[in-house]
Structure formats: C-alpha cells, structure tokens
Image 1 (cartoon, rainbow, N blue to C red):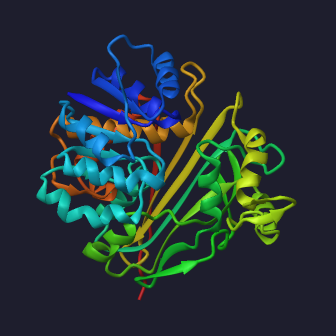
Image 2: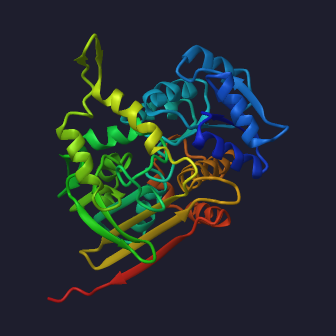
Image 3: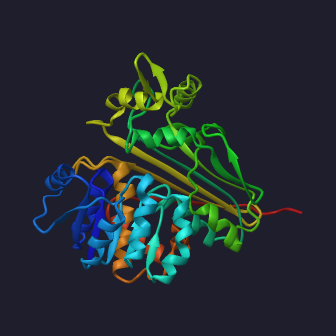
Length: 388
C-alpha cells in the first residue's frame, strides 16, 4: 500500500508519521520547499518521498496522481481549497480521505461513483469520529430521537487573554464563531447564531466547560434526510466546548466588529479588522510549548427517548512523541480509515459519510486501532421504560 498525504502542517505531518509507523509507503505533497523540508525533519524517515505540488492547481495535482501509484490520498488541506483538490483527485481516479468537510463535497457523489473511487469526507475527530459515534449509536436503536455532539480542542489550563489556545488555525476559529450554525429541529434543518445555545457541560475528572452552537454536523445534515433511522428525529446539533467565559469574550469582539472582513480605512491604508486581529493575536494564542486537551461527547437518544448511548473521549498531548491531542485524534483517525481503504476493507464506491462507517462492523476495527494509539472512548448506556 502507498499513500500520499497532501499538507505539511500539524495534521498532515501527524498522519504521515502514523502511516509510516503502520508500515505504509508514504509520500508527502506540499506547496513550499521549506515546509516539505520541515516535515521531513520531523518525520525522519529515509523512505519518505516528497513532492512539491500546489493542491489548488488542478493540472499539477492530476499530473502527480496519474504518474504515481498511490492507493489512497489523505487530504490535510485548508477548507478553502479542499473541494477543488477533491475534484481533481476524483478525476484522477483516486481514493481519498479528507480531514475537512465542505458542502461541495456532497455535490461530487455521482462523479465519485462513476469513477469507482471511495471518498470519506470530514474524516477527522469532529467532524469524523463524532459522526462515526453518532452512526454507531444510531445502529443500536430502531429510530433516533436526538443527537447532541460536543467537542473542543483546548489548552490543558485556561490562559489569557481568551482562556484559549489555537490547536489548528486561528482563521478557522474566527469562521466558526461568525458562521450561522445549522441544526436540526423536528426533522427540519434550521439556522442558529453561532455562540447561541450556551450551556455548561461537565466531564468527570476534567472539569466544566461551556458549550455553544457551531456549524459542525457536516455530512449528518445529508444523512438524516436519507436514512430512515433518523426519520423521527426531534433534535440534532453540534456544540463547541470552551472554558467558561470564553463565549462572552468572543461576543465582545464581534460586537466591536473586530471579526468583520470588510476593510476599513486606518490612516493611509485599508485593513480588514479580522485580518488585523489575526496578526495581532496569533502570537498570543499559539499553543507553543503548552500541552493541549481534546474533550468530546456524543449523545444518541432513541426509541421514544427510552435508550441513550453516550460516548466520551478525553485525550491528552503525547509528551513522548510531542504530538498534540488535536493532531492525534484528527490525523490518526484519517490515517486508520485510509489504511482500511488501502487494504480493501472499506470498498464502497462514491462519497461515504463517516457516520455510515459507524453503522457497520468495520467501526470495531477503527475503535481497536484508535485504542492501540491510546485513544480510548468511554461508552455508557441508559434505558428507561415507557409507562402508559
């Protein structure tokens, strides 16, 4: 098996390392020589191949894919170029695991089937593992009533100025806070303000976090309309977890129009407030030498509110290997699924939402592989009777 990882950041590097450790032949593609060199220095593998390629350049990417013998591509790319890269990869008849999700992915379903390739979009931790756990919970009931997803990548201790450190990309965080969130109410998709729906959620041995709506249901927004198990669903949402007080600080930034993208005149120049804020706060909010924490909970309630499956994941920075919990849970999930595709154990053609994997026997293999990497999910089940 041979895999190509596109992207040389934290997630791409972690995915490549996991694939190498699993005995997979790996190549890494990136736009800049400097980032490729840095990635090589971190991976320290004499067998690693690297390719200088711009994933947003269709012709360049297709040429690479058609002149190589990759079994699967793992995309660790920014969302803004994810869809165009995936279009090129499908046209080149490549199987793909994409850590990101954008709605344009679902528009490629017919093309992926026609090309007889397997594509798993939104296959990280959330979306990704959260969707698989939703699918697994759904497989245990006759009909789903409610799905609640909570997830947050955080520093292990709240730190000023926002009680938060960036575990991936600050621009992506701002986008999360300003986009309206799609949720499901009584079987219909509705929009809610990001940061709305504020509530407190407790995790034993970790602490209390605040949770608010963000637009993170990804493929579930499509699956619930097509899978009969979700036919009577009353509520489904995804909320981001942060330390208490964070949402109020972000609301202040929004009210001050500091997350606006329209340029304003400042002296002799025009500058977008969000761009300025990103430049100002990136050094303050970078995780740096601090250790991070990933907390996630998925609740699936079904059969007329009689059955509830709860899945909790608490993961910590890997001190030995120097890998963040966000990279572990996101990149390792993508790596495991890519390996299963390369081994022919996931072979359905077309766009395959992660929740569909959760509904199948293959999910036990995914859980076993995560456990081997010390990523363990606590499962609990409660049942109540209906009294007439």
